[in-house]
Length: 256
Length: 319
Image (cartoon, rainbow over all chains, first blue to last red; front, side, top):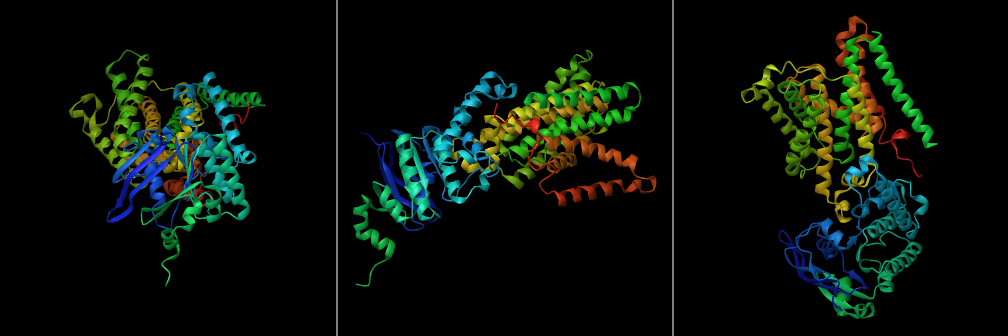
């Protein structure tokens, strides 16, 4: 089976700083892979490169066999890659429902003229996409709060709303940037359930960045470890946990 | 429920129209005040345009008067040179709208890359250029009058025209804002990076918001030209952009109701103070009016409506 996402020799320089160096990653359809590493290792930069938020200095990123280089971020989203952000980026002033409905925009199926004239097609399309948005909200258990402003949601709910919004893009590949950050053990447990559920239900491939080791070790089938912009280890959680280079990157070199 | 609310709104609209028309017919409303009321409707249309640009799409424009001017001069030039009677009026208005939209598109593509204050400065610069162009336009098209002003524009604007078009503008903006394209524009205002990440072509929707807003500005300009029958570059210079900005901020960014109320209140207040104030302090009118603005802003920094709408302007929650 060919790779869904294939990243080769990816390098990104910020001035004199090499944030990502010769990074590689292969994701097969249905994978659930974790990207871990100490702070500043370049994990989020990798996400930004894959989603076209910033252009790479060199290297190749291919999705479903087609290169993503040079595409603007929204085009990459249309190809089927959605993401969440480390520092949640919701549309704060809008309702929970509208946060999700906006992401359905490419599937709205009506144009400006139809909207302005309120044609039957417009009404029907709006009804459909509103129903779909409600359904997604029920998946992340935010159905009850559909009409609230996103900014008023508690932190954990905001994270789940961001996932719902990403799902509305109808992605094949979902990138989650520290989904469990700031969550308590109970919330982490529910998040794990959610990730497993959406993966099965929407047949997603998931790549996630996370610092919560319990979360990563329990949910990910494979891990890629980064340090100083480079891949320093790959393998199953057990292999990675036993890897000397990884332990060194996290804990430093022992005295002996 | 929705049917009844619609009925009430329709009734109010018809009543306002009948009141003004009746007032004019019975001479209770003198021509001066008729003109003021028409001007309030024109400001409503123009401010609704800026609200689409700034309030909904989040693009800070200080050049709105330029597009108003482009609409005004284009339509006035058509009705004046192509004098075939009142039939030319709607065509001229449409031409003004198209001219404003087209120029907004061409100027928007490069400058909408800028953000917030930088965009403000760029649009301000554009406004000054347009004003200077019209100052000297008589060198190319003598009809436009240049810095002497353009005279002899036929008086076609009536209350019926401005009232219907203002209602049309309200409906247009409402239908646009509560649609998928409108939500795409709002997402650009809320968070451009997140909008891109979920597949919104932010350049496209920034441009769309800007073009639609400027088109409404152009429409207002065309109505203005045919109301006062005289145009001068001073009427469209950058200071006029601030009047519109003030209305939009005063009414509340991203609120149609707020824009309508603030546009009418602003116009009527400015003139109303002449009537209300005793003659000995009349000279203080332009001091009292800014003081009132400051007070409103201090008490309601989010604007009169603060992003809220009258119920009838929101689409029925669920049918």
